[in-house]
Image 1 (cartoon, rainbow, N blue to C red):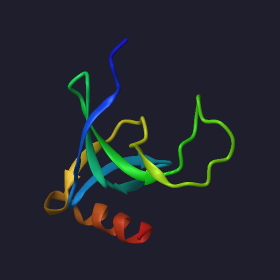
Image 2 (cartoon, rainbow, N blue to C red):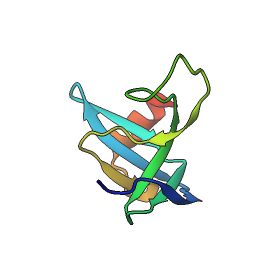
Image 3 (cartoon, rainbow, N blue to C red):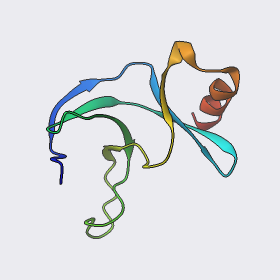
Length: 91
């Protein structure tokens, strides 16, 4: 089992995680990059923790990993018009 402990966090200005959901583009704003002890870097987004290990209904927003779905990280300058439109509809 790899070590998923976060060892460093840095800001992620103008970065996004993009994936399709129900044939629609979903664009998440990346708040920070997390470097894990196993050397993997992952994007963090604002959200509510869910899933195994979450106890009770914690209404506190936290930085959480991007959804575990097939997607891609893109910088603002690399977004297509369709991705920009999807971003504007979630803002």
